[in-house]
Amino acid sequence: MTHSQTRSIAHACSSRPSRNPLHRMSGRTVLLSTLACLGTATAFMAPAPTLPLGLRSSTRTAGTPSSCAARSMMRLPGPHAAAGSSVALREAAANQLLLRYRAGRTGLLATSCAVKTKVSFENDFDRETLSTLSPPSAGTRFVAPTSAAPDLVEEDSSMKMRMAEAKEVQRRGDLKGAALLVDGILEDFPDHGKVWMRRFKLAQKQRAFSEARDVIRRALKHVPGNAILWQAWADLEKSLGRYAVARRLYRKGLEANPRLPSLYNSWGCMERDLGDVSKARTLLREGLMLAPNSARLLQSLGVLEDVAGNADLSRSLLGEGLLLEPHNAFLHHALAVLEFKQGRLGHARESLRRALSADKDHTKGWLAWAQLEEAAGNVNVAREKYREGCKARGGRGTVQLWQSWARMEEKGGNERAALEVYQQATKLYPRDVRLLLEMAKLHEKRGDIHKALTALEKAVAGDKYNPYVYQVLGQMQLRQLRVDAAREAFSEGVKMAELRLRSMRGRGASAKQLEGGKQQEQEAAKSLAVAGVGARGGVVRAGGGEMVRVRSGRIGSAR
Image (tube, rainbow, N blue to C red; front, side):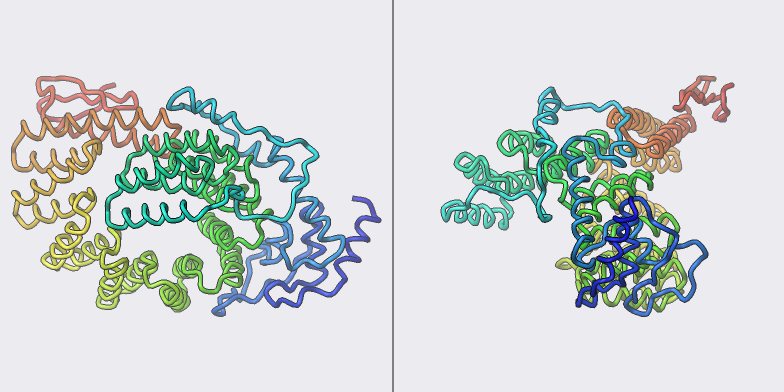
């Protein structure tokens, strides 16, 4: 940057700041933000903004940037920037990033998020579909940000009426009937992205994932530039554990619309959950550069920094999000978790109170508050919070709430109360494997083997590919001296563990997930060995190259 350019930026920053109190920044802070975005940020620090609830930390670790300075280092200034040349520079930098996305060379994203895993596709059409979008010419000019690609198909009154009819059929519980109605609408309106999305969600609700994938493929033949559809496909593959394919699809979505904040958020959260903090941070920061007022991105980045151990920066990011959306339950919940981890229980309770005042059905808030009181030794208060949380969402609550409540009762020695909680929960969630397994263990603990085995049979029916279910079943049979039944359960568990591990390798799972799969395979093999397989001196492969030798019912590693 030349001396004249620096001087012009400083002149622009000296102008009067915005009147909006949420966006007010000093001229020096705007200058730092602009210089940071151009790669020439200095070591100056700007004062941190006032945070809600009095949560601003009284001290800051040496070297930890304040809120404004940290934010200026990671993204362009938002609407609080002064008018004039600083605005022009901000738009120019954003447009350069957009052009790189369109051209397929996105700087940080292109390097840090490159896919090294071999991608497996359902069929050849997937490869063709992933190559359908063509980037615009390098001279394309981008305008103000939009939340999504516009739907150019005008909705007429007949389509609205037919969609309302399909929605009513869905409300009555007839998902297949609703899907047939939407299929009829698509015959007349094949270029309408909202209709395709409704059809996709109907397939998802029926857990017909192959059908959902086929719906998206057909949709992208008609509207290949719809970034929301690309994200929907990517989210589907992410939920099924096909992470390498999901990355490719997220990238295609960004080519279609680089200003869609939910794309950065969903992709960044996937990388965070897979343990790659650097990739996740890069994605979320680039999303904030293009959508600086996205509370959702601020919340995700705040949670990421909390996970990474940067508590002060996390608190500042979440505080900025709350300035934008003061009644956002997810932001209040994330801040409560941060304060709880820092030992500030009073602040955590206040944040949870605000979260639940904003949304009574925010079950994560009820769960966090109940667990906070349980950890503090306030069992009666925790029980009340669990009870209130289980009343949310029309009296269904969530599996996590019911299970945590039951475990608290069992831990406190009140097994009858715990069993009553499990029984209520399994009426609402009759095929949930976690609830059934825990209830089976409690039945066995109380001496009711018949009810325990009945619960385990339901668990097997609920997820016959889960090796842990067979391990629990085999161990219970073995404790009852039913060796043949135990051997059969363990053998099935080994098969399921091997199938799951192969599936994880094929879909590009993370190293951490693969390690968990290998450990599960080894545990299944060892359980099978305990049941007496090869009691005359056989050898059983335990996964990962390890061999388990069985001799007279004793286990030892075969070297």
